[in-house]
Length: 153
Image 1 (cartoon, rainbow, N blue to C red):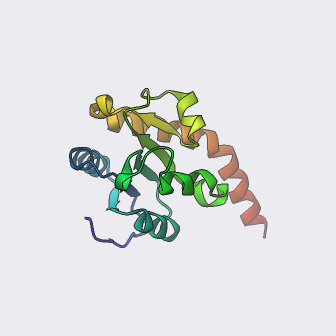
Image 2: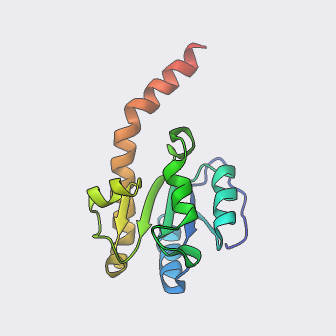
């Protein structure tokens, strides 16, 4: 599924921006098993273009994606500086060796929902499910209010 697949109304889209082949393979397998339709990207330009085209539910981003580091990762900077209206629909997970899995302060510092260390990738599906559930619960009041406002028009 490396090519762009069209997303239907009932699909659950996920974008994977990971350069490490082993991590990419594992992430794609876990997300497929969880029922997500995956778009794997290989460059920062592809990431930006696709992110604006599709309301991805899950974003997996490697800190060293496309040869970058946490400090010079254009895809991470894009997400960090993006207005909330463009990123509210997505649960963003940052993968790297400098993070302690599910460390909320590290995630907050990087403006993502969760972080996961390479050593804990066998728990990737659990981390995604937990983080997505927490994010959905947090945003449920906002989403309910948005639906009520739209129905009043």
